[in-house]
Amino acid sequence: MRKQIGTFDAFDETMEKMRGEGILLIAGVPPNPMTIGWGTLGYVWSKPVFVILVRPNRYTFELIENVKDFTINVLPKGFNQETAICGTESGRDIDKVAKCNFDMKHGECSNAFYISQSVIHYECRIIHKNKVDPGTLEPSIIDTYYEQRDFHTIYYGEILGVFKT
Amino acid sequence: MRKQIGTFDAFDETMEKMRGEGILLIAGVPPNPMTIGWGTLGYVWSKPVFVILVRPNRYTFELIENVKDFTINVLPKGFNQETAICGTESGRDIDKVAKCNFDMKHGECSNAFYISQSVIHYECRIIHKNKVDPGTLEPSIIDTYYEQRDFHTIYYGEILGVFKT
Image 1 (cartoon, each protein chain N blue to C red):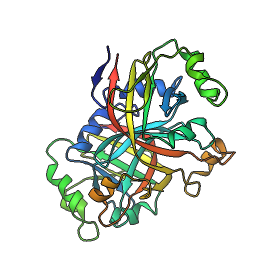
Image 2 (image 1 turned 45 degrees about the horizontal axis):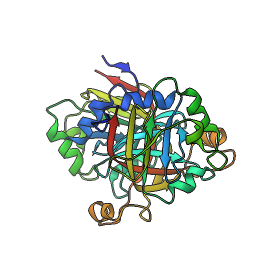
Image 3 (image 1 turned 30 degrees about the horizontal axis):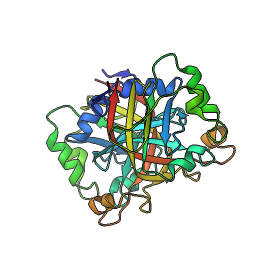
Image 4 (image 1 turned 30 degrees about the vertical axis):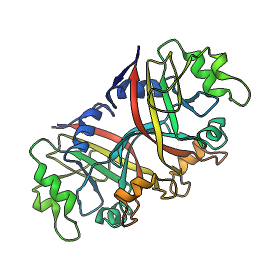
């Protein structure tokens, strides 16, 4: 049974996992988890937001561009292999949900799916997006992360609910 | 004596104050504190960041556009009047630092000034900026916050250090 918790109650755990194995973004149908290691949390336009970045060449980009809602899934310890698969394989080639034996559930307060094995999950609705601007980005960051010049789109998801097992 | 703390150790206190009276952004010279109520914290490009928004008509916008560094100042209880002044008055018209009796100090690890009365302060260096995109922003947000169509510039400050009294 999952219970709803305060918007930022799981901030520390989310950041720690995000900087470690990564956390899983799911948007659209079919549900296709993608591992992310970057994101920010806070308030914008007086709303709590989870801000995430997706590169335009990712399958998740095709999916998220056509929906409003996404979930962020924080898996428990012991799922490093699954997180690695969802960070390196593409949903264009394999069914990551099947390969990882993830149990998918429909969101509690959104139209996105979440992984029932996650210890924490966020349900978010996109209220804004913009793009990384290469013209104002620190040149060393371009060299390190954008050799292909595949600059991320940045999605601002209003946090509708945060749930914990 | 201020001591350096972990990057996100003061997240809860910062968010609580930000959503209450507000926290103070200082960029450029002369140091001109501006109260902000919105911002996000997390990791982008593997760096810890404090992301803030400034409207183009603000005096702070003129200042921050010409520098790399800014500070975020979290004042203790009892400074509501000062926070209100720094949120409503413009540094073009008055010297907010003098009016609020703020004691300004040069940053510990940046070229921005901070308020020595703050209980927590962040020192940040801008590594990216982009703009709120009205074309992708939720229409109700435009109606509520952008009647003048003065869309914010969004600054990504790498967190160089966080300090606590």
